[in-house]
Image (cartoon, rainbow, N blue to C red; front, top):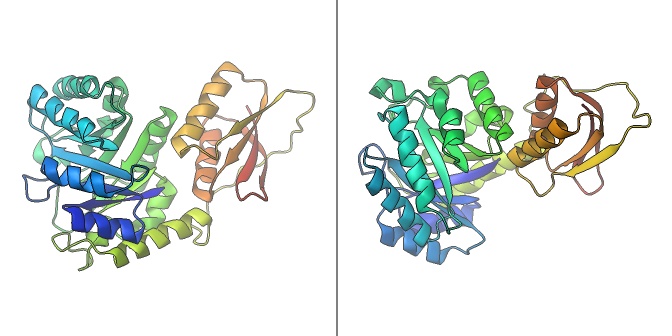
Length: 329
């Protein structure tokens, strides 16, 4: 679970970077409900940030004009954005599919990832139901998706979609091998719920601003650093958000069966779950030892195993700092 901070200009981008943001996401809060920044701002941010650091672009709520959106996405590729987010409010489903297909084609030859986006409060605007996110992203071969909110009246993501529902949506996205991101007026007080859901990315704006929770003020490095510190405390287990969560265990020995190792230490949680799913779908006899980089991903693997009726035989901490888990399909 990494931190994405929304910025509007180069100064804010540098503040976010100083605070430890993993992704600097360039957007325009003044355009419509949420819109795209000027290409020159994206260019300046990308040029100022080392290429190994993430600089993404949000197009916001896109118009129902396929060619126009594809051109904007192509520009994000030219500018070497890490990813570009294409958001839909009141599109018809098939129109959104057509647009994302065109965007995917526009990014051919670029390293920029395509992120589809729906809004948790879309139904207030007669828009696409947010629970269609996985279906839409899978059908159009998106690299990942984002659920955000448009309402700026104090309500946030959890006022529109319950934790359990978000958990299922994120899990489905991970099983499909996509990155998953949640945003929408999130605060530090939401971090326990977010950690239990464990999306790949948590996106904030107001919580990163100098006037806390005032998204119209400027991003400042100190609240960014505190939010990042709180995320890391949950990743390390210093803050236990799973105190009442069930722990998988089993008593069956490995006997004489084959033993396969899946190294997830360099993967996202989605990558780990996708690798486990792909392997067990083709080999349901071998025992699988998976190496997991942090506590939140460990819990995701436990839930994945329970959902698929696999048994977790052992779970132990490795001296190198990761978790080894042995699974019997």
